[in-house]
Image 1 (cartoon, helix red, strand yellow):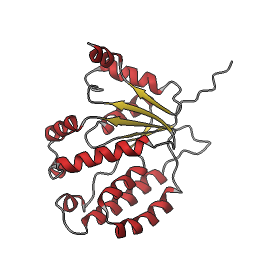
Image 2: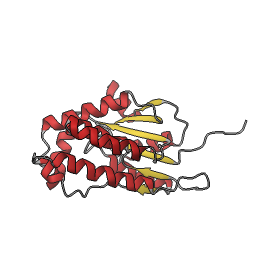
Image 3: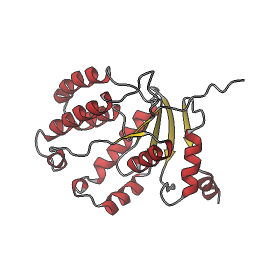
Image 4: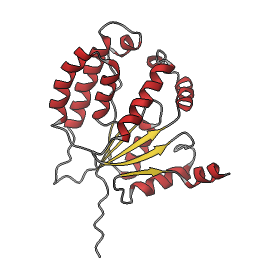
Length: 221
């Protein structure tokens, strides 16, 4: 019987800050010889938002919304394209943060543009959702010590983690691979990376979970 499985052409990696999205997306793009789409980081309103300035949340969110739309709208994923794309975000992520940070009145305006933009964008074939415990992410934030992230407090980080968990618990827009990165190191532990790459090249239908053999052995020890 012919092999009807086609590798996903549009893969998106998602998860809360410092979970390893950009690192894994870069590795996957290199290994799959794919175009990499990097989440926009430059936002003139972001620092003001983290510092709690009035109105900065809406300004920051809307700037991200437009930039993310522009990036994904430019993708060449038509039926005649042979290109593979790996992005380190999905468009729905923008609304997740909008619901966390905007007032009801701001959200009403935001949603009009969000819905209009979303209708024009492709949906990933596969989403890889990276998880980690709040404790692990807090340690990674401190270790990275990025100036723009210093104002992120523990309560906000935990709200973001819960929002991601809730969102992906109900996610059905594409095939989904859930990976807990608390005990996984894709950079220094090559076996973890090899297993994940093998998993991505196999059929994934619906929602599946990934746990490397090394982590399984550690969990049962």
